[in-house]
Length: 466
Ligand code: SF4
Ligand code: MG
Image (cartoon, rainbow, N blue to C red; front, side, top):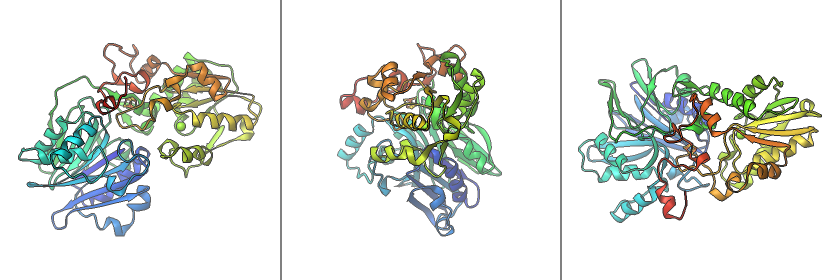
């Protein structure tokens, strides 16, 4: 998901809509905005579909007045999987004795089911099936006198990944979980302040990047006091999601001081060193494989070409919830550039192999178009474990790499060769020259290593074995 918030700018909701539009790659199912104005109070709008199709209509934006607003773009990882109900669309809102508060959450709470059971037993009435709603109910049960204090209480009980953007009547609030699994940045525009999942959404509104919200940090922002910083959690070594660098974030964003584009190009360079192959053309699987393919071509000296063309009007396939739509999705989204690839030995660079559905279809399309050989090079290690921290990977047994070796996957996909970047190679590409520190890994890489930095307790309760 993507989260965005603005304080201290007239018509804040308009800026939030623009920010969410720039974060649309983080969630395409639905979006929501809450604004506050002293005259009209809290107002909210939730809609299915793209931000640009909903939140640019003057009639809708006029219902969201004020100089303080937050928003959320959703893709479902927890909660009502596959069938988002409008009541699952964030931001969520709660009315407390000291006033209202709205929150938008990116990440996934790994003890949400246990918390929900406990809260329901104590009288909470849940409106949605979303894990994020727990935060509001935990806040309601806190005895603290202010909303930020209640929020600290609530978040101390929550396990897993959370980058939260919240608002009261007077403050914009940002919090990152102690490991800082999901991103969150602070920006400045004129007299106003901005919180955003990624820097690319600061650029779109002309805000200047100030800094990242630190792992475990809570920032309270008001026009009068500026940014106040708190550290409500026990300090721990951070474990940012390495897959944000590989796939999830936009290439024009800066994560941890590093250009995502440059990291991906570097992954391609590492891949070319680790797994060279003789061929005529390096092609990305667009768009997610593009920077890595550029790096691969650069390092190998093999020409780069657009052997697969993407229809710009389709979203990310994996975000389509049902298997059937996903299957069709590949053809709706990608087509082969026959004239370029006929008769050639092709290296295809993609970001990841998850179920293998995409890769199989692409191999079929490439061979149909007359390619002589197809070699897959993958910009991440084999995805053998599900993510429980906010990226929607399927159950473990649906992951190709959970039950197949690299050679078995190569045969299953029907390609001439298949190689994944090593975990160390990936760490080098994100700037860790020594590779992965196995005693104290610098990132979360659980989907590749199976080492979960936060025990997924709901899943363990259901029998999941790490
Ligand atoms: Fe990111 Fe993978 Fe960790 Fe999930 S499991 S947070 S996708 S690195
Ligand atoms: Mg892809």
